[in-house]
Length: 116
Figure 1: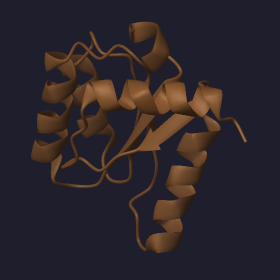
Figure 2: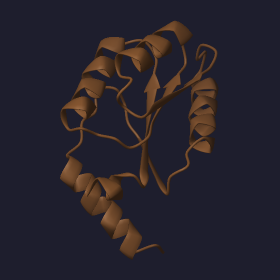
Figure 3: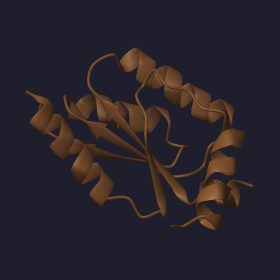
């Protein structure tokens, strides 16, 4: 079933509240999530690098931008992160979100069968 999740990239915007990002990534470790994860960091390259090192067994890449001054900067950061997605599907999550892995698999199977 992991092959199904390989069709999905998670984009995790990071802007302060790093403790929630750690909690979210700990959850991905717990469920042995192996699909691509893009950290879209709008504040601190050092934090992104420390997250990548701490969670080096996850499939994480990082895109660091200048500090988000407004919504335009935030949406530009998300757009640039989406441009780096190489999978069929993408999911934007916040660092205090959680998901049920089996539900993601069901959603991907549904999308595969209903491409219109």
